[in-house]
Every structure is written in C-alpha cells, then in structure tokens.
Length: 167
Image (cartoon, rainbow, N blue to C red; front, side, top):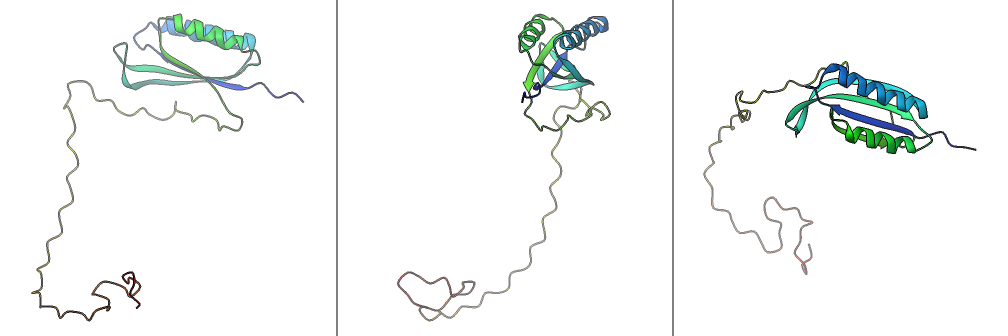
C-alpha cells in the first residue's frame, strides 16, 4: 500500500509596500509551480498584519498560506530557491504537516489586532491595582499560657509531631 503524498504548508510574508502587480505575479508563479508538480489544496490570504519585530524596516506584512500535496521533493527545493531570491518576500516557511493535523483557522474573517503607530503615547500604563482591604484592628494579645510539652500548639495538627516523640 502506498502512502498518500505528504501535506505541506507554505506561509509567505510579502512586502506590503511592493506593487500589487508584483505581489500578484509572485503568488501566481508560486501557485502555478505547485500545481504543476503537486496538488494545491488551499490558498488563504490573511491580509496585512503587524509583525512582532521589524523585518527589513517593515512593521507589517501581507500574509498568505498555501497548503499543498507533493510527492517529489524537488518542488520544495525549487520553491525555496525562488522565494529566497524574490525581493518582495520578507519571510517564508515551508513546513511538512504530520498526519491528522487540523486545518488552519480562517484568519481572513478575523480582524487584525489594532496597531499602535510609532510615536503615539509610548508605553501604556499598567492597570490600577485593586484597592487594599482595610486592615482589621488587631485584638489585644493576651499572654498565652505555655502548652504542655508534646501538646499541639495553636494552629498545629496533632499529626505534626517532632521526630522521636509520640503523640
């Protein structure tokens, strides 16, 4: 019995400042090369999202996810080389999925979290701490009578017995 071709994820982070025609051509070429040597399962455009850290002085990128089957791994080498040379690709990652991995979420419907532009407000103040509970007045302490030796002190349980003692 032959195993089905493995499934791969290709995540592309494209330069949002590149021309739309250049990004579209890059995506079309990538999709065509996958379709020629494998089977393209899905292409999700996740839109422009903020980056965790700047890449090539860019603070956001256009995210794309392509899922595909391929039996011949020469396609992976070809994609790797092509995407490394492309100027409009900030980052990409090709990952072989383990069998049974759930399908990716539909991020195109979810709005991207709002970004704070540089120079706006700086760091946000931490939330105000909850007000402290008013201290209860301490009751006057009465001198405690010493407990007989071996007896459990207040707050101790009888199971807490010092080594060598019986209780």
